[in-house]
Length: 515
Image (cartoon, rainbow, N blue to C red; front, side, top):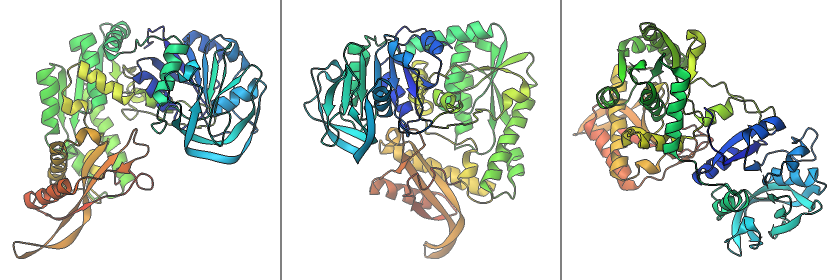
């Protein structure tokens, strides 16, 4: 889908870990932004018609052999440019300045003194904390540039060429550690690029529905519905566009959380009146997983079995030509090799290779959106809050939270324990503040005492983490009374458990899931 906006910002990626964050912050300010590789052609930049261009940070040094560069023609497009970190050093080098290794590497918070007369720093404080991450510095600015900000270690922490509308920062305005970063980005968007805040989810829904109708016509579409927010919002958008020409297929693999199947059927079939094929494949998956303990083997068996079940059901529906997938913008970014400093290559398939095997055309209405925007679309479409704000749930489901061999008894214990964890976290008003919270059943038993009798039962671990994108995470400092309630309820209400432990491992070194 082409987003029909005149006010757009283009971000050229040089491999920074924060590039996606730049795009998300700009969209929070209701201006549409897209990320492209640093070596995108000038023709494609002109075709995109950006109101402003941002050069991201990156791990390279501009004087390294093979350092990523852009064509100098970009500086002559008469489009405002903002360089961040590596982007600043690149501007300096390409326009005739001098970049050299800093005597003292600057990493972390720094006290920044901005020139508040410059439009980039309008309405900022006289001193402001910013986040630095660099080992190089601008020794000499290019002709026509002036310094517009400094720190104790970096005299030229920001510079600008007023006539060319080129600005550059040595720090990262997009990260939370930069106190007034959002104000700086806002000044660039609205005071310098003259953008209007036209990016809103209600407009996106209208454009998306129109595009689906245009692309699909009166053909039939199938969608693999998991009950998660991505597939749910995808289904609602496609159904809004083509009605009963959409059929959703929901596979209960026996690895879902408590009450999840009933919730999906009630929401989509009874509330939204979407054609839904329900497949009870619980025993089939359990049989295939019998005796399997290796996590990777579990994942492969579940993925392959899902494809088999989905194909069988899809072939029962006549004249299907399209497959709807909940591909998000980060998936699109990561699936493209930028052939540059980030070297990010990820093969992305939301439904495990189904398009290739079934020869279906793809409908991906969410491919321009970040996760928070998908949730906003879901709210606009009336998706229940419990689905819209559901914590991420892994594709293999409870199989990778049931360590070791999977059995129906262990799954039943895990389902009940997981429900208690979520109930208590919601009761404490913490659910929306946590990225993910869940229970894990361990493949060990311990001795306990219950009612003056010796027990030898399973251990359940509780996991709760905060994160922005799941790439890194920190454990949540749950209040002791919440942990106490969770532990008491699990032990008292679930037969077969006599010990509860709390996971206090961050990612890295651990992962969010246990398998």
